[in-house]
Length: 285
Ligand SMILES: [Zn+2]
Image (cartoon, rainbow, N blue to C red; front, top):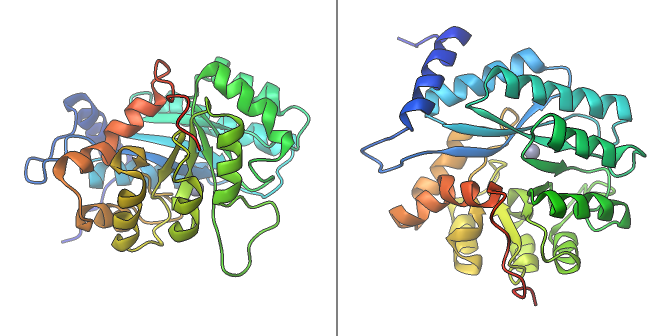
């Protein structure tokens, strides 16, 4: 019979999972952190419910969340997205960490970032599809993130057709990395097409990648590990738009040792978001 969960069930169990430090003996996974999830604008109730349910079903110990919706959001929309994430953080402080979503095209973007990190206690910055990530408009935000020493999650998606105007791909991430080798950058979705994205950032030692997006086959995980090693790969799902189980299955099936899986599932994320950790300089070519 299909188990039906209420929000209350999920909350109770999620909290106890976090307290216990989730442990799956059979698979040897100590913890799973999903570092790429969203609460889409205007869908707070539905999306937070879906995310909480997934945490319970799949034993996710922590999620990093950002709010997004329109390609070019105005100041009011950005403000609401960040308030949504802040609300979720306050409701589930042990489970939810936030990214501050900023749009470099808006005149107040630096103030938005400062409010997100200093007032809301967010852990990183999210940039989406309003500008290429190496656009000079982005520089002040990156410099502020370096000062805070917080990671920047960069949507990055190389498409064969229908590439959006202003949509970042791996070569833009590589440009930003070379300009700011001290920034902690995350190229999301393996760059969309890993054979384009990973190649672009392979020698950029301050670029991590996440596997979120549910579009990939396990071969692409194997390829990425061969190119950049397991210690620059982060586990994310892109829920609620994408499914968790597909991303999880890709890691489980990939040609990885148990120690490499642990790096990807949570150790790399803990390290990257630690404000005491800085990328080693001099690694970029
Ligand atoms: Zn996403």
